[in-house]
Image 1 (cartoon, rainbow, N blue to C red):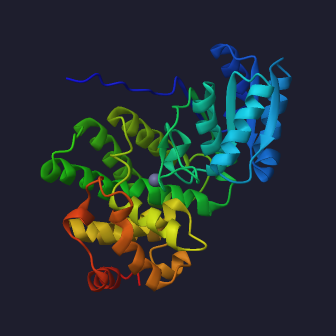
Image 2 (image 1 turned 120 degrees about the horizontal axis):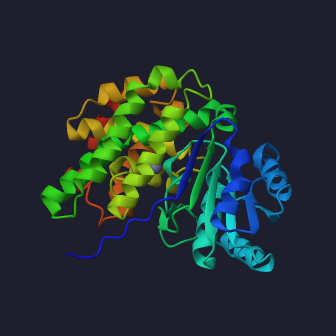
Length: 348
Ligand SMILES: [Zn+2]
């Protein structure tokens, strides 16, 4: 039996105001020099407070602003990390800052702490990074955060659209886990029942908690934050993104490639999950209704994407990652099939 390595965060903090514990975490883990990787807006919201919190406790920190998640930017952040002799990269922000900090930390051999200001996808606690300019339009292995600090006060005051998108990402695990099971049964892929159950449970809990999460308070957003942590944990246990990324994610990656202005990752995965659930024979209406309750998009117009592009994405999705066996490997959609699926599920 091959060695199975599972990397998990050492510290996960969830709650209102937990950002003020970052100095204690750095001391506990033995970091005296940090580089804060953040965005322009998120620097004001959380980056600057983080810098103050560290400075007041004698921890040196520099900051670097990132505006995109390109591979070139990762290289620049690595240079900044070397220049400031940082022992830890603290990603403070949404997707871009976290992804860039995570990959730069992995390449530079530094530790990585994740401080998300939005809860729009499960990458905020995982070891995988989504960076443009790599040879693949999907996530690459980076490093597991040594600590994840989720300040529910900051996240609840971010635009609600991001929270709804995070729910879409989690809910889509219902179809992604089914894809994994199918890949095991029909393609002989490795399948881990524990990792699969964890991802599936997260999806079910977010669907059940939809009316509560919709209230969008620091207390209610907690259900989503814990689900995102569970999804990341399931990927760590599986050793890949397999429990969390199947056909709905391939559909989202396809949209990212063919649409000028894609919607948020989790929004696209949620809509993808409605259609993939129908292909799998799952309760696609239940998924759609939960997304509606959450105020997440369920249609092409809700995503701001033309129906034609939805069909194109459905047809081309599996080709992006042919080796990842999903329902789209089994049911090869042509244009007519894709149009029927999108129409019957009310997406177009
Ligand atoms: Zn995702």
